[in-house]
Length: 190
Image 1 (cartoon, rainbow, N blue to C red):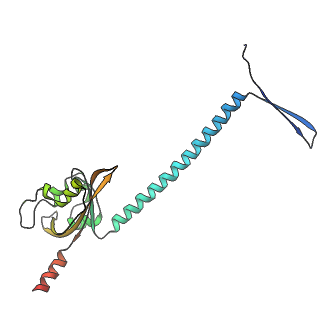
Image 2 (cartoon, rainbow, N blue to C red):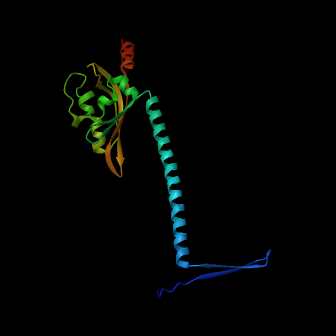
């Protein structure tokens, strides 16, 4: 067909048998074979690497879940619109809401809508709301959250902004029921 094929001829003498061995190979075919072998190695290593990374992330997720479930303080997250993204079991116990009832809903409207004196608490005045707008950490030591049944819960909390790629994505709120402590302080004063 007029095609010129360059051949790689390798000669080796095998000492033990005194045999001269010739290998005739097409360099282009050899290169294709080496490329395929390298691609298979990279694919195999890539799959193994992916499985290792997947295992690491699964373990981190499991550890984070254990920490959230074990924490005695209530912890919940909000996105930049104030909608709940997660809620730990301690928060569920203190607030009377199940996580699935809060996730995706505006947490301020659910638990932080009213001051202790009964006046409305606008979201734009809320320190939790401020954290995911101004990017500062806000700590409040004497405020009220509202239980699902409508009773007030005296709380202290810290609202910390969550940033993702330099942009504020929401906040995480850690809170503690301080009702018993406040009652004890009142008794001591009396």
